[in-house]
Image 1 (cartoon, helix red, strand yellow):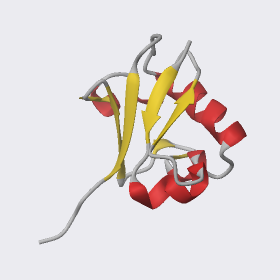
Image 2 (cartoon, helix red, strand yellow):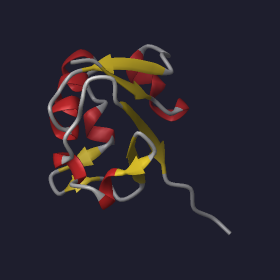
Image 3 (cartoon, helix red, strand yellow):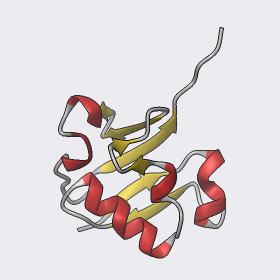
Length: 90
């Protein structure tokens, strides 16, 4: 199963500058573990021991995984996962 993961500019140092990488996994959590095995440190910037980090948004095919099953969200072949840092300010 191949899943495209779109990486924000701020995290591309972990992917060798790549805007998108391929990964595998039955859930978002498994996908992040797979990515971290090839891009060490990447998962630590997205999740912590509680789940998704507060200021990071993860979308599965344009749907926020927080409104699905979080890191337990099921993935299918051909899905697109987008990682975005939350934007704050005023």
